[in-house]
Image 1 (cartoon, rainbow, N blue to C red):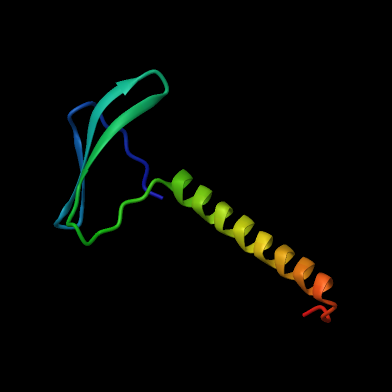
Image 2: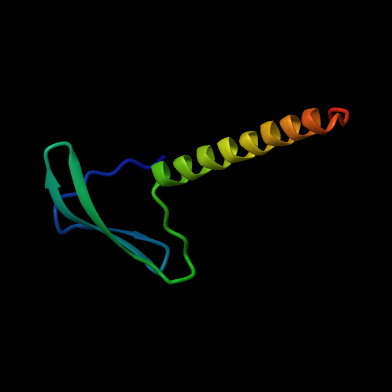
Length: 78
């Protein structure tokens, strides 16, 4: 992992077409701006984690619902 120290207004270049700019620094957080081509997905890690956890919970709920339905219908467990 490359670790850099940047000041407000300074930039980090990734390849030829991605620019990360430090916009503001307050307390324990910073604001950054990211310029990248539209085809480059940019995601916040905590959002991806929350979506993944929600998907796992939804899949579990579906498995539980299927098991309850099978039990009510007298079908064997799958």
